[in-house]
Length: 155
Image 1: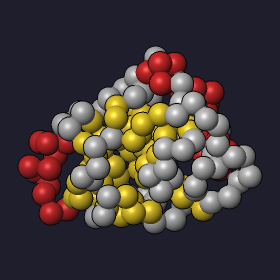
Image 2: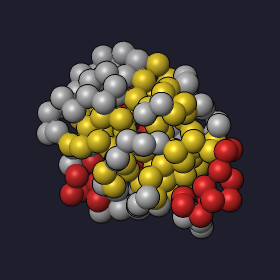
Image 3: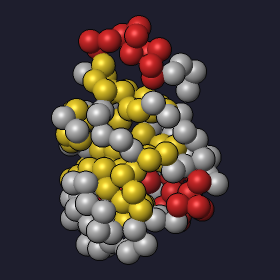
């Protein structure tokens, strides 16, 4: 990512939405950007695992886990698969696990926190739908930028 989110917002202002939720930077890359892909799921990461095992082509997967910290939606193996398949990053409105291992990967990961508990694997959820996190709509195909200052997405 070549431009800081603060500078980008100064340049483009009303064209962008800024997420007010304070996410933790967990991945090895703090700054990342790319086209949005989305998943809405609650305590079930089967669709996350499946999606991150497909070609990412520099995209960012935005996972709306409803803000639940009860179980992890991304772990080290899923994050390693994302790296292998060319994803730029993952933003999780929920929990991840394996923080230290994920922190060693060349991948942007932002999440609300961590929990060692595994999630269900039933495949319940929706892929490539508009998700709203912190009052901001993430539309598949829109561009998202993330760094230490926060997250911006095209309106």
